[in-house]
Every structure is written in C-alpha cells, then in structure tokens.
Amino acid sequence: MNETWFLDTVRWQRGALRLLDQTRLPEIETYLELTRVDPLIAAIRSLAVRGAPAIGVAGGFGVALVARELREGPSTVARFQQETDRLIAARPTAVNLRWAVERVRAIALAAVAPDGAGRLDLEALEAAALAEAERVLEEDLDLSRAMARHGDPLLPEQGTVLTHCNTGGLATAGGGTALGVVLRAATRGKQLFVHVDETRPLLQGARLTAWELRRAGIDHAVNCDGAAAWLLKTAGIDAVLVGADRIAANGDTANKIGTLAVALAAQEFGVPFYVVAPRSSFDLGLPDGDQIPIEERAGDEVVRFRGGADLAPGSAVRNPAFDVTPARLISAWVTELGVEHPPFRPSAPGGGRADRTGS
Image 1: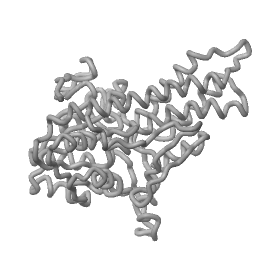
Image 2 (image 1 turned 180 degrees about the vertical axis):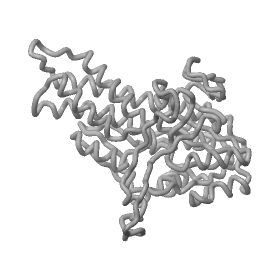
Image 3 (image 1 turned 90 degrees about the vertical axis):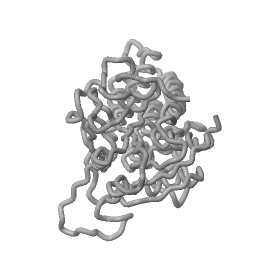
Image 4 (image 1 turned 90 degrees about the horizontal axis):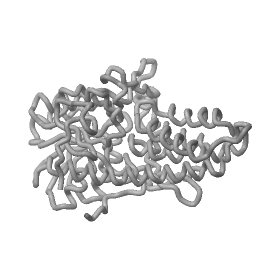
C-alpha cells in the first residue's frame, strides 16, 4: 500500500525529540528540536504537538529526556517518578499520554535496577527509555495502518464525509486515525469529498485537516462549526468520522469540543457517526464519560483571534477543550482490532464486540 499520506510528526533524531510544530501550520512547515523536558511540556500544552496518539508518542520520548536531565541532580527512583509525572499532567484528558509515559517508565525501571543507595544508572535508563519509546512509535504507525484498513469499507466508493478537528498524520506519529481512513481510501481510488469543520477556537480543522487534504489532493471544503448540522441535513453526507482523546468503559467518548453537537445532528439526520481510535485511547478504569476529566483552557484562545484584540472585553469566558459523546450516539468504534459495533462490551476482546472488517 502506498502510504504517501504519512508524515514525520514525532521522531527522535540526532539526540533530540523532533516535532512538527503544528502552531505554525499551514503557513510554515517547521520542526522543534527538543532536548529538555520543560520545552516538551510547553509544546504539549501549546498544541505544538497535539492529538492523543501523537502526544503519547512524544511523552514516551519525554521519559528519556527526564533520565538525561536527572544527571544534573538527584538520580533516585522517586525523583524519576516525580519528573515523569509532570509529563503526564501536561494534558489531563488524553489518556494516551499517561499510558505511554507509564509504559516507558515501567520498562526503563525494570531494565535498570537502582544500586544499594537507591541511585540509578541514568545513561542506561535513558537508553532503555529510548528503546521502548521507539517501539511505541512503531506500534503507533502500525495502528494507523490497521485502523485505516478496517475503516475503509465503511466508506462508499464515491461519497461525502464530514470531519471534526484534525485526525490525520498530524494527530499521530504520522498515519492518522479518522482522517487516516479517508486518506487511505483515496489512495485506493475512492472518490471522496470532505466537509471540514473549522474547529474553533484554534481551527485545527481549517489549519491542519485542510492542509493534509490539500497535500493529498483530496477535494474538500472548510465550514464553520455552526454549519455542520445544516450540512448533515442538506449535503448528502454519507458518514461522520472523528477521533477520540479518551473512551470510557461504556463507550462514552471524549473528543475535541464540538464533537457532541455533530453527533446529535448526525443522529437526527440518520448519518452514521464513527469514532476511529487506537485501543490505547480506551480507559476501562472509568465506567462512563462523566468520569473523564475535561481540560479547561485559557479564555484568550476564544476571544483573541490569532493573537488579535480582545473581542469580548470584560466578559467571562468558558473554554472547555473537549466534550463527551454518549455511546448511544456512536454507530461504531474503529480500532486496530476491527470495527466494534454497539452494544459496547468492555469485557470482550479488545474492549468491545469486534467485527473484523477491512481489506
């Protein structure tokens, strides 16, 4: 399969974590090269790297950066735990970040036992963390291939889809979740038109999804978020494809703010609503979506458009970054294991009833 749509979103090169800076797109394609932990935390919080899978991969490499920095101070297990916990706290909603950091940290600590005084061989710890982070990255690329393969049959040979936020290679290590399905389908000759929700307040759809679609040569149109319901009623849309930052045990799904409104409209007008996400986005420790922490971001993102003047001086601002779509509004969850249809069964293999589809 020709994977020309893949991007180098997150990579470790020449002793540094190299991130495609998404805050500069679509105007400038440039990379951050990070060698310390605090700039990585800042990159995660500022959305220079964003999308749950991409944040997870970056966090995995961040564990290696923690080990490197600890050479400058105390090198105990407790200090290592404390510093890697700071990575986890950078974005609380995306479960992939916690999952990847905890995985890489555990593997590194298992490989490097502390000495009698509780000190760690930090050079060996960094090497072990890097090796595991590379495995996380390669697995993420494989997951993108699998999700795209399983999701492809859900789309017609010729038709129209609607997306919300950015779920392509920029949201992963390079392949994509929901948009990856579209990108793969296009390489196989399907003729698809994509309606792109702009995704306020930071315009991940208008800036990033549209950039990826232009790069792939796929016909599309950007629409304001408020137009999504009308388009679902009038534009002959065949499917909605979205990603996920965290999925609870009952299938309730947290995703970029505005997803819930799209899901409600899709149900009203009979349009299938698909969530495409890797199994690492499933948090089976949370019984339902009411337990998912929702990040509240700075109000300036809403009222200062691209750094301009305050559009609502003196007004209070609410800026929840995510909302939760109830499982009853979701037609299926597409994971690397297959297409999982309701009813959602977390006790089944892979967390749901997996119908292995794909090509």
